Structures are given as C-alpha cells and as structure tokens.
Amino acid sequence: MTIEGVNVHFPTRGLNSRFTDAEKYILAGLKSDWIKQSLTLIKESYGIDFNEYDVTVDDINFKFENTDDDTLAYVRHCSSYGEINKLNLVVNMKYYNNIDMTSEVRAKTHCYILTALWRMN
Image (cartoon, rainbow, N blue to C red; front, side, top):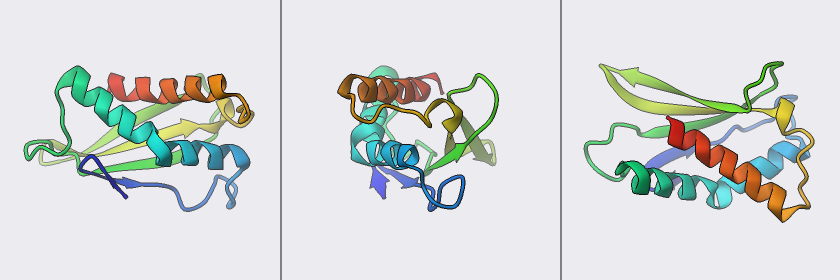
C-alpha cells in the first residue's frame, strides 16, 4: 500500500501466528487514516513531504513485539550510503493487548500516541 509517496508494509501475522483482536484493531486504525494523518503532521510541522524527490525514505514497515520494558512503541531507521531509506515502527503489545476497542476517546488517544512517535523521529 502506498500512502503519501511511501510504501507501507504491514505484518502478515501476529506475535503468536494469528493476529489478536488488539493487533487487528491497531492495524485497522493504521490502514484507515492514522498513517496518512501522521505523514500530514510531519509535512505541516517539519516541511518533510514524502512525495518530494529529495526525500529518501521509500518504505515504512510495521511490527509488533511484546517486551517487558517501558517502551510503548518506537521508530528505527535503516540507511544506505548515508541516506535513510526505511523506517520501522515497532508497537509493544505489552501496553496495547488490553486496548478498549469500544471507546472512541481511547482509540483517539492511541492514535495520538502513534502520531507523536512520528513527530519525534
């Protein structure tokens, strides 16, 4: 899937082979508008437009993990010849396994958390 000039890659299976309901919920949010909103926020805040020829990031990969630390999610980058060409967003399901999928306010809060991650990187 290409969004705002970036190839977006989603996991094809969950942490335990099948996606949990929480993982499905997060993926559905990402696929709906979270990514587009995040990329728009980056463009408005930093002037970085992923459709421009001089932006070297071509791919964003999403991954789930379950680690016992204080990290909600994080972004790593991969580079080639000194240029960043790929971003990896990792969501720590330790904090999202019990996400309230019925609360609109709660869903928006988690959307903002993921959006904030983009702003930091």
